[in-house]
Structures are given as structure tokens and as C-alpha cells.
Length: 222
Image 1 (cartoon, rainbow, N blue to C red):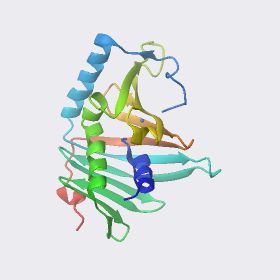
Image 2: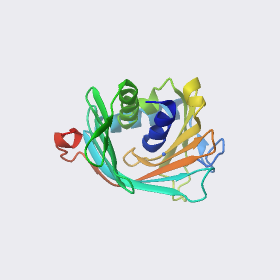
Image 3: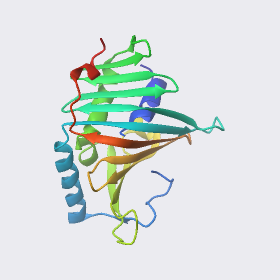
Image 4: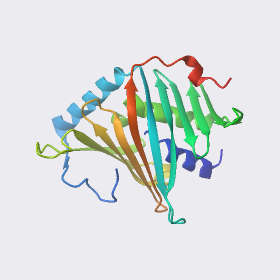
């Protein structure tokens, strides 16, 4: 898989976060010391209790090359410890399946169009962000947490997580990735990634269902 393809897939999936091109979310305070440790602990604890999850997602991408915003929709299925199905349903059906030690890209006819080690590494990265490991212990990013503690603010139950790339291959692709997370269930509400090119990808999640029965057939290519 070439670098361009990896970049496109990573932009489509990174699970999973709103970024406005500023150094700190407006009206939010950077968490440090005990406050930072506490939020990391809560994220890990909540993630460990997620045995399965399914939801809908809407992805919007703005590009410096096109005037119109590209919109895609789909479904996400996750089953602990290492199974993920990221399925685009419109406008162009495409499914990415990560299951145990395997990773596949499947077209609308069910044909496997790609499967390799780099795709597997991408799947491992995505899953690590679902189970919380990628948001609390990740050598690829500098991770900062921001919270709004004003009771009168409607966003008081939101924590922002800013991931700033520190390794060259990611720094060449992204300015920053931010996660807008609910402190009710510590799951991502929105993801926005700003690329070096000026392009921006936004993914919002809805209709989340936690710890429901998801058959293994959802992660099969047959």
C-alpha cells in the first residue's frame, strides 16, 4: 500500500475527534498533574469495560482542491479485544475489517482489494484508540487534555484531547488530531484532523450502543 493510500485511509478512520487550528480549545483549560492523571485513569477504566460497540458515523472532508465538501456515511462495529469493522455505506460502499491478526479492505462486491502488514498496523492503531491505550500511552503523539469546568457551559461534560505528532512520518501528514469526548461514557463524539496540506476531515458518531451482541460474522470476509 503506497503512502498516499495509507494517508487517505488514516484520514477516513482515525478513531474515531473538533479542531479549529488554534493552540488551545477556546474556553477550555489544559489539565496537568493530578487532573491529567485522573482523566487518563477514567479513560482507561471506561475503555476496559467496553466489550463491544456499534454506532453510525458521518464523515465530512474539506479540501483545498475542491469547493464542495465530500460527505460519507457508514457503520462501525467493535468487539474486544481486536476486532473492528469500519463500513462505508454511502456514497461508495467500502469496508475495512480488522480481526485478530488479519486486516482487509473489501469492496461492495465482497472482493478483497488489499491486505498487508501496513494495513494491519493501521488497524492496531485504531483499536488502541478504542480501548484507551492510544489515548493515554502513545509514543507517536504528544497528548494534551483540556476540560471546561464552568457549570453554566453546555459543554461542561466534554473533554478535548489534542494529539500532536512527534514522529516524522505523521508530522509530514498532520498538523494535529483532536478528540471531542463525552465524560459521561468517555467515548468520542467527534474527531477532526487537520492535514499539512490544509485538508480537514471531520467524523461524528451517533446512535452508539455499548456491550451489545455482535456476531463474529461481522468480522468475516466470507
